[in-house]
Length: 222
Image 1 (cartoon, rainbow, N blue to C red):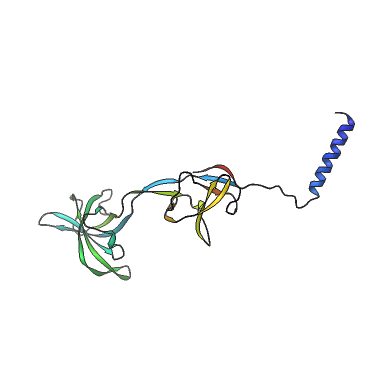
Image 2: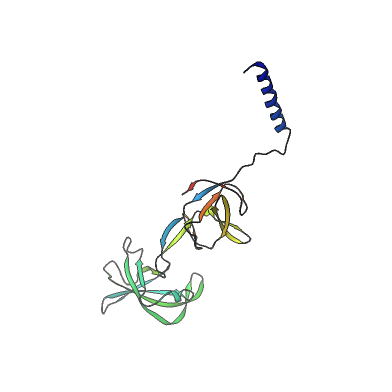
Protein backbone atom coordinates (compact mmCIF):
# COMPACT_ATOMS: atom_id res chain seq x y z
CA UNK A 1 0.00 0.00 0.00
CA UNK A 2 1.47 3.42 -1.01
CA UNK A 3 1.64 6.36 1.37
CA UNK A 4 -1.39 8.23 -0.07
CA UNK A 5 -3.65 5.19 0.22
CA UNK A 6 -2.52 4.54 3.79
CA UNK A 7 -3.24 8.14 4.79
CA UNK A 8 -6.74 8.12 3.22
CA UNK A 9 -7.53 4.80 4.93
CA UNK A 10 -6.60 6.25 8.31
CA UNK A 11 -8.69 9.35 7.67
CA UNK A 12 -11.77 7.35 6.64
CA UNK A 13 -11.51 4.93 9.58
CA UNK A 14 -11.04 7.81 11.96
CA UNK A 15 -14.08 9.59 10.61
CA UNK A 16 -16.22 6.47 10.91
CA UNK A 17 -15.10 5.91 14.52
CA UNK A 18 -15.73 9.54 15.39
CA UNK A 19 -19.15 9.33 13.79
CA UNK A 20 -20.14 6.34 15.90
CA UNK A 21 -18.92 7.93 19.10
CA UNK A 22 -20.71 11.16 18.27
CA UNK A 23 -24.14 9.44 18.28
CA UNK A 24 -25.04 8.60 21.90
CA UNK A 25 -28.20 6.73 20.85
CA UNK A 26 -26.16 4.09 19.01
CA UNK A 27 -26.41 0.76 20.88
CA UNK A 28 -25.52 -2.68 19.61
CA UNK A 29 -28.72 -4.74 19.60
CA UNK A 30 -28.39 -8.17 21.28
CA UNK A 31 -30.71 -11.17 21.16
CA UNK A 32 -31.48 -12.97 24.45
CA UNK A 33 -30.28 -16.56 24.75
CA UNK A 34 -32.81 -19.33 25.35
CA UNK A 35 -31.50 -22.45 27.08
CA UNK A 36 -33.31 -25.72 26.38
CA UNK A 37 -34.79 -27.35 29.49
CA UNK A 38 -34.72 -31.11 30.00
CA UNK A 39 -38.15 -32.37 31.08
CA UNK A 40 -37.62 -35.13 33.65
CA UNK A 41 -40.04 -38.06 33.50
CA UNK A 42 -40.80 -39.41 36.98
CA UNK A 43 -43.10 -42.34 37.70
CA UNK A 44 -45.33 -41.51 40.64
CA UNK A 45 -48.24 -42.97 42.58
CA UNK A 46 -50.45 -40.79 44.74
CA UNK A 47 -50.63 -42.09 48.28
CA UNK A 48 -52.08 -41.44 51.69
CA UNK A 49 -49.76 -41.81 54.71
CA UNK A 50 -51.14 -42.25 58.23
CA UNK A 51 -50.09 -43.87 61.48
CA UNK A 52 -51.89 -46.17 63.88
CA UNK A 53 -51.49 -49.01 66.37
CA UNK A 54 -50.88 -52.69 65.70
CA UNK A 55 -53.41 -55.06 67.21
CA UNK A 56 -53.19 -58.85 67.47
CA UNK A 57 -56.07 -61.32 67.38
CA UNK A 58 -54.82 -64.07 69.72
CA UNK A 59 -57.47 -66.53 68.56
CA UNK A 60 -56.19 -66.82 64.99
CA UNK A 61 -52.81 -65.02 65.38
CA UNK A 62 -53.71 -62.42 62.73
CA UNK A 63 -52.47 -58.85 63.10
CA UNK A 64 -53.88 -55.54 61.90
CA UNK A 65 -53.23 -51.82 62.08
CA UNK A 66 -56.00 -49.51 63.25
CA UNK A 67 -55.79 -46.10 61.62
CA UNK A 68 -58.09 -43.08 61.54
CA UNK A 69 -58.58 -41.49 58.13
CA UNK A 70 -59.67 -37.81 58.12
CA UNK A 71 -63.08 -37.28 56.56
CA UNK A 72 -61.54 -35.22 53.73
CA UNK A 73 -59.54 -38.30 52.63
CA UNK A 74 -61.93 -41.18 53.32
CA UNK A 75 -63.32 -41.08 49.77
CA UNK A 76 -59.85 -42.21 48.60
CA UNK A 77 -60.05 -45.42 50.67
CA UNK A 78 -61.85 -48.62 49.72
CA UNK A 79 -61.93 -52.20 50.99
CA UNK A 80 -59.25 -54.39 49.44
CA UNK A 81 -56.93 -51.43 48.80
CA UNK A 82 -53.24 -52.37 49.09
CA UNK A 83 -51.12 -50.96 51.90
CA UNK A 84 -47.47 -50.82 52.96
CA UNK A 85 -46.67 -50.99 56.69
CA UNK A 86 -43.43 -49.76 58.31
CA UNK A 87 -42.45 -48.71 61.82
CA UNK A 88 -39.68 -47.45 64.08
CA UNK A 89 -39.84 -50.64 66.17
CA UNK A 90 -38.92 -52.79 63.16
CA UNK A 91 -36.46 -50.65 61.12
CA UNK A 92 -35.47 -51.85 57.67
CA UNK A 93 -38.54 -54.05 57.35
CA UNK A 94 -41.83 -53.45 55.59
CA UNK A 95 -45.00 -55.49 55.33
CA UNK A 96 -47.86 -55.57 52.88
CA UNK A 97 -51.48 -55.49 53.81
CA UNK A 98 -54.92 -54.42 52.64
CA UNK A 99 -57.95 -52.48 53.83
CA UNK A 100 -60.06 -55.08 55.60
CA UNK A 101 -62.76 -52.91 57.11
CA UNK A 102 -64.01 -49.32 57.03
CA UNK A 103 -66.16 -48.23 59.97
CA UNK A 104 -69.74 -47.30 59.14
CA UNK A 105 -69.67 -44.19 61.31
CA UNK A 106 -67.20 -41.34 61.85
CA UNK A 107 -65.80 -40.28 65.17
CA UNK A 108 -63.96 -37.35 66.74
CA UNK A 109 -60.23 -37.95 67.26
CA UNK A 110 -57.52 -35.68 68.60
CA UNK A 111 -54.82 -34.53 66.17
CA UNK A 112 -52.26 -32.43 68.00
CA UNK A 113 -54.15 -29.73 69.86
CA UNK A 114 -57.35 -29.98 67.82
CA UNK A 115 -60.11 -32.51 67.30
CA UNK A 116 -61.06 -33.67 63.84
CA UNK A 117 -63.65 -35.97 62.34
CA UNK A 118 -62.21 -39.24 61.07
CA UNK A 119 -63.21 -42.78 60.15
CA UNK A 120 -61.58 -45.86 61.68
CA UNK A 121 -60.03 -48.17 59.08
CA UNK A 122 -58.60 -51.65 59.72
CA UNK A 123 -55.51 -52.66 57.72
CA UNK A 124 -54.88 -56.41 57.84
CA UNK A 125 -51.20 -57.38 57.65
CA UNK A 126 -50.55 -60.15 55.11
CA UNK A 127 -47.71 -62.10 56.73
CA UNK A 128 -46.92 -60.86 60.25
CA UNK A 129 -43.92 -62.28 62.10
CA UNK A 130 -42.28 -62.03 65.52
CA UNK A 131 -40.92 -58.53 64.76
CA UNK A 132 -44.44 -57.17 65.20
CA UNK A 133 -46.04 -56.81 68.60
CA UNK A 134 -49.44 -55.77 69.85
CA UNK A 135 -49.41 -52.05 70.65
CA UNK A 136 -46.54 -51.03 68.33
CA UNK A 137 -47.00 -47.82 66.37
CA UNK A 138 -46.98 -48.39 62.62
CA UNK A 139 -46.96 -46.15 59.56
CA UNK A 140 -49.35 -47.07 56.75
CA UNK A 141 -49.09 -45.92 53.15
CA UNK A 142 -52.15 -46.44 50.96
CA UNK A 143 -51.83 -46.10 47.18
CA UNK A 144 -54.68 -43.85 46.02
CA UNK A 145 -53.95 -43.90 42.27
CA UNK A 146 -52.47 -46.04 39.56
CA UNK A 147 -48.83 -45.23 38.71
CA UNK A 148 -48.47 -42.34 36.26
CA UNK A 149 -45.63 -40.28 34.79
CA UNK A 150 -45.03 -36.74 36.03
CA UNK A 151 -43.26 -34.12 33.90
CA UNK A 152 -40.75 -32.29 36.11
CA UNK A 153 -38.95 -29.07 35.10
CA UNK A 154 -36.53 -26.86 37.09
CA UNK A 155 -38.19 -24.25 39.28
CA UNK A 156 -36.40 -21.51 37.31
CA UNK A 157 -38.28 -22.49 34.13
CA UNK A 158 -41.65 -21.54 35.63
CA UNK A 159 -42.58 -17.87 35.93
CA UNK A 160 -45.72 -16.06 37.03
CA UNK A 161 -47.69 -12.96 36.12
CA UNK A 162 -51.24 -11.70 36.65
CA UNK A 163 -52.50 -14.43 34.31
CA UNK A 164 -50.95 -17.27 36.31
CA UNK A 165 -47.90 -19.52 36.02
CA UNK A 166 -46.28 -20.00 32.63
CA UNK A 167 -43.26 -21.34 30.77
CA UNK A 168 -41.63 -20.19 27.54
CA UNK A 169 -41.77 -22.44 24.49
CA UNK A 170 -39.12 -22.01 21.77
CA UNK A 171 -40.86 -21.84 18.40
CA UNK A 172 -39.08 -20.81 15.19
CA UNK A 173 -36.76 -18.40 16.94
CA UNK A 174 -39.47 -16.89 19.12
CA UNK A 175 -40.24 -17.17 22.83
CA UNK A 176 -43.90 -18.10 23.18
CA UNK A 177 -45.59 -17.87 26.58
CA UNK A 178 -47.64 -20.94 27.60
CA UNK A 179 -49.73 -20.85 30.77
CA UNK A 180 -49.52 -24.09 32.76
CA UNK A 181 -50.90 -25.78 35.84
CA UNK A 182 -48.24 -26.94 38.29
CA UNK A 183 -48.49 -29.80 40.76
CA UNK A 184 -46.12 -31.64 43.06
CA UNK A 185 -42.93 -29.93 44.20
CA UNK A 186 -39.85 -32.16 44.34
CA UNK A 187 -36.22 -31.47 45.18
CA UNK A 188 -35.36 -31.62 41.48
CA UNK A 189 -38.15 -29.32 40.27
CA UNK A 190 -41.87 -28.80 39.92
CA UNK A 191 -44.50 -30.90 38.16
CA UNK A 192 -46.12 -29.50 35.02
CA UNK A 193 -49.63 -30.97 34.86
CA UNK A 194 -50.55 -29.21 31.61
CA UNK A 195 -49.76 -31.51 28.64
CA UNK A 196 -46.56 -30.60 26.81
CA UNK A 197 -46.22 -32.13 23.35
CA UNK A 198 -42.96 -33.51 21.96
CA UNK A 199 -42.77 -30.56 19.56
CA UNK A 200 -42.98 -27.98 22.35
CA UNK A 201 -39.53 -27.23 23.76
CA UNK A 202 -39.46 -25.45 27.13
CA UNK A 203 -36.62 -22.96 27.54
CA UNK A 204 -35.11 -20.70 30.18
CA UNK A 205 -34.14 -17.20 28.99
CA UNK A 206 -31.20 -15.23 30.37
CA UNK A 207 -33.09 -11.93 30.56
CA UNK A 208 -36.59 -10.44 30.57
CA UNK A 209 -38.51 -10.92 27.32
CA UNK A 210 -42.06 -10.45 26.12
CA UNK A 211 -44.28 -13.02 24.48
CA UNK A 212 -43.20 -13.44 20.85
CA UNK A 213 -39.77 -11.84 21.25
CA UNK A 214 -36.89 -13.15 19.13
CA UNK A 215 -34.40 -15.35 21.02
CA UNK A 216 -31.47 -17.51 20.05
CA UNK A 217 -31.19 -21.09 21.22
CA UNK A 218 -28.09 -21.86 23.27
CA UNK A 219 -27.17 -25.04 25.14
CA UNK A 220 -29.35 -27.24 27.34
CA UNK A 221 -30.20 -27.14 31.04
CA UNK A 222 -30.25 -30.62 32.61
